Image (cartoon, rainbow, N blue to C red; front, side, top):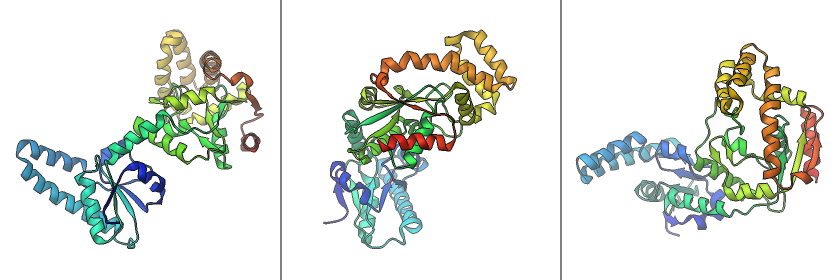
Length: 351
């Protein structure tokens, strides 16, 4: 084969995990929005450099812009080779892409191939990859799902984590979305990914599952924070067999106090989030919850939130949205220790 080779994504997909490196030649901001699974960012033009060259195109002319752009591209590719690739053997096989499979990835692929590496350029670039993923998520190859249901604080996320640790197949949408799926679900230290990145990680998880084995997933709503679960996956979840996880309310309060420590340690932050519930519960109720938070009565507040907000919302929605929940296998947790979740996970994984 002559290198650099130009190949489309559908043909590359069966060998995608066999490349020694997947190189995203786009700028930092493009890469942050979404990228191929496992890719590293080696900008051929940085964000600032793209602005500079683009301004020259508009204000001067294309020829002057191309001269400056070519010098920047050559300098950046040289730096990437010197700092990242100089020790790679001759058989090292990279896949390179940019936005549309044009000059940015083409320049890098050509230079790497001229050195002697069997470089492959993605035809159509990220845009072609994104079109493939979007189409794939309309009708994804979905294995059997087992949906973990249960009221807020019953330990669904912890159970998924333990299932994953013992080798079960798990699709943890809240982990992928960096959100716990409720008005208090945002993680202060970790912003949510873009919708495109969320879909990329879902697609990547689904393509790697063994279709002969079940996949455990939590009974999410259509949106996890600001991100929307793909419709085909959501529909499959709502029709799938369920597991009903139960835990006493005092233990649920304990678990939530542990999982939401960032709120229980910061009453002001918690109160700001509680204001989002004013339309549902009225100002007087919100003010009383503020007083509990500010007064250090967090366990009392958590218990009230479960009784007045979370449990009624769960009961209103679960039967309507998950049609097999009435036939769910019940898994009762006696406590919230590691051994309790391990026993539950082993029971489910053994089936």
